[in-house]
Length: 322
Image (cartoon, rainbow, N blue to C red; front, side):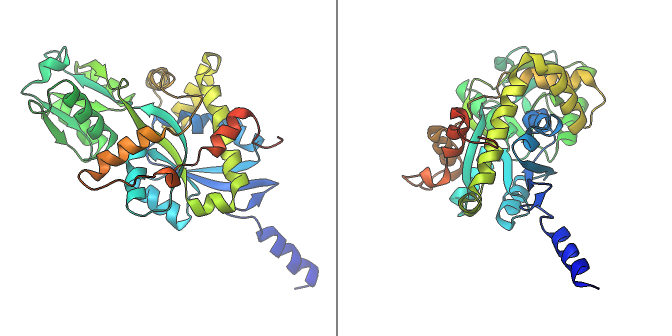
């Protein structure tokens, strides 16, 4: 093979994979743990070309569990992780090198659905409420809500392994109510259930974007552009004028043909997404304390948070072309 041909092959190989470049774009992988409407900002960012506008070629990577998300971050298979703040807090306390760079949903985002005999939270006394895995957002939000209402000793919380198992338990009567993230609960209307309430009045570090500290130090421009792009995306999805476009993206990435479900998800999350996703240290500390139980939480948790990226994005001093 001639020298020029060899050189051409080497140049063609450069920039392939995450962290490289593709036509002038920096390539990164963003991992997220569930294909739900809560990630509508990522879906819209991808479909509206907002990542590309900020110089990024983003591969959205669905990782089914929070442990996979943390493993992906530390191994470098994903460069940004979106997920439940509880899982990230647990990783931080366990020694994982994490930096939370956005808090896009600062409240619990689950709903309680039940049969006709449950019209209020008080009606749950003596009954069973189904949730998913222990420590999941459905589990934590349910226990927070029940404790707030003084029902934590009167209601049995039943942990199930998956969303299909949860919905099946509701349909076959194994539980009297269930808690899940929208729009899945709305499917219980098919067997005569209704929404009782939601958990959005309870503040928490519900959904964060995280990078490793080492990646942030070595790739500040990439992290800056990701955060700037997502801030723009959050503004896009919160704008009622963009409802139809966002609903279409939610339907596409959650793989549903039921537009009404996608609309339900959008209408719920458009109220809880924030356009100023600054990481609230107080909420992160609260989440860490919940995870740690009787174990101590560091006095200084600032090493796990870096708001410089989102502050620059909100000030208009970061992002491609600025």
